[in-house]
Image (cartoon, rainbow, N blue to C red; front, side, top):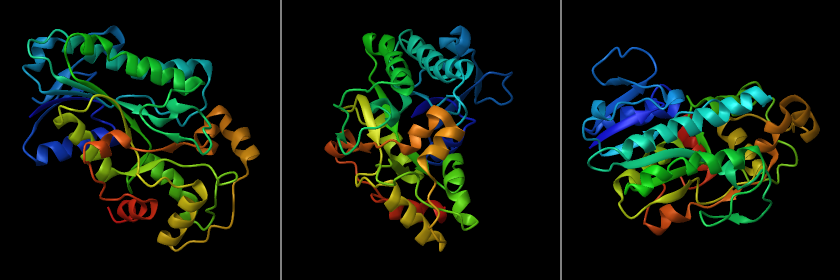
Length: 296
């Protein structure tokens, strides 16, 4: 199959491109600079610029681009977070609508769209999006797929939790305190903490791309939800480190501002759509996903 990949320079983009090429797929990478290799194509999503003719006849367009949310959300950076996701998705959707053979269009999304604190409520793809900045971003992000859908493309949005892998930036930050013996739960620890192994994220992304019956939002998280306290215990056990230094919620809010809710809020997400189409997880629990991350 022929894939066009935006966000190919990021952690997930590099991993997906490597995985696809290893299986004999063709991957074209969208870049914002002068292309350096034959598999790179220049685009400018801020201006909505991408020549459909440069893509040939792709089977799948995937957008993994987006500014890091783990920084203070100043008004300026909020706009960066939003536009880096919406403009890239909108540009791919517009191009898909112009191609003679409509490709599948997939964008990365986030479970943060369900709201910053959903308690024990089970969240499936049929659950309504919540309120708050990231929920609004997800609405716009996924809504940017509409031109492609209206033109006849199958579209999907991967609502992904924290991807666990030794080289994943989020996992490196989460595990750093444990490496120096300072690990502990975040806040009360009772909040559900949605995660997924890199292996299962890669498998899920390809499963969605190749399965004609799947469209719309797709939760990509382990099917056995874990609380932050249980995740902390599992991570400490796997790393042979103590977990006796909890991080108070007030301290996290003081340092991280509104972003703290992405770690303190509860998100009990289930990958219902994947499982209803017989997708099986190699690492269905937090201990299994953590073990896979540490041995990758």
